[in-house]
Amino acid sequence: MSLILGIESSCDETAAALVTSDRRILAHRLAGQEAEHRPYGGVVPEIAARAHVEILPALVEDVLREADVALGEVDAIAATAGPGLIGGVMVGLVTAKGLALACGKPLIALNHLEGHALSPMLSQPSLAFPYLLLLVSGGHCQLLFVEGVGRYRRLATTIDDAAGEAFDKSAKLLGLGFPGGPAVERAAAEGDAQAVPLPRPLVGSEEPHFSFAGLKSAVLRARDSGRYGPEDIVASFQQAVVDCLVDRTRRALERSEGATALVVAGGVAANQAIRAALTDLAAVYGLPFVAPPLWLCTDNAAMIAWAGALRFEAGLTDGLDAPARARWPL
Ligand code: KG4
Ligand code: ZN
Image 1 (cartoon, rainbow, N blue to C red):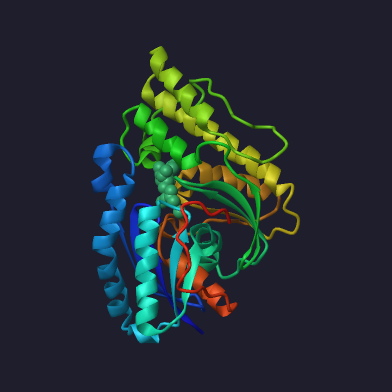
Image 2 (cartoon, helix red, strand yellow):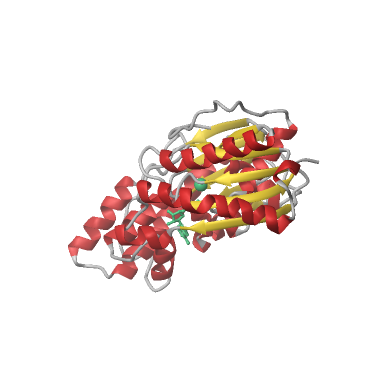
């Protein structure tokens, strides 16, 4: 059994967690920065990086104190080393390097996407490799066939915006505030999903890739036409996203022989309409649908510590010269 300290700082959440290789979350802390970024209608990288500098050390102290663990008792320090906003990634990675140096334990420089990809196993012990993962967040929209630790086959990605980005940008166009996803979902509940004819980019195409930029432009045109209310526009928008995600995921399922489950992760997985549609889709293929609890779906450090524990157990650690990467395909 190993004990891993995990650190996450690749976007606008600062987080630390202590997790064991036998799936025990001893402590986890997360500090969001929504209030700092709200006036700008989106995450400002410079503000995020500065906030991580100020908040992260206290979160590390908090989780060690709560779990009653001394730094020297930790087996390794895992931190997101990318992809993400580079200033924030550097804060977390350098903090992890300092801690690793101080306690003489190995560093694990993790791909943030690997954290998301393995997170469902933390909450669902029965989940077995391989599984098909739909990762839908503000920064990512991918379909990954997860075969084992360090073995990920990317079946699809977005050719322009991520799904969460589409929610955020559409919300901004309609003055619904930031972050857009929850605001769109609330407003959509009041609207008619059939009211506005919107495109379903790439639906029916051979490769299971995603595209959302055209949908966002169509939302802008619908707004400017003056013919529709904002609730009807967002309800129709959300339905279009659901249709795209389901069609693309179906295409990927056809290429996922041996998959034991359909799994979703990332902040957009909070959306109930999306969850319901994916549950139905999984049932068609006779597969269980697995979605981690919401706090584990969105950015957090428990998934980083957990992925770190799996890598540590597999003997996969990194040198203190590990680079921070803004881009890093899994
Ligand atoms: O995984 P996450 O916390 O951060 C990263 O982007 O890595 O995901 C945040 C994204 C945002 O784009 C947000 O608008 C979206 O998830 N989101 C939602 C909902 N809640 C959050 N999108 C649709 N419906 C929601 N209920
Ligand atoms: Zn993420």
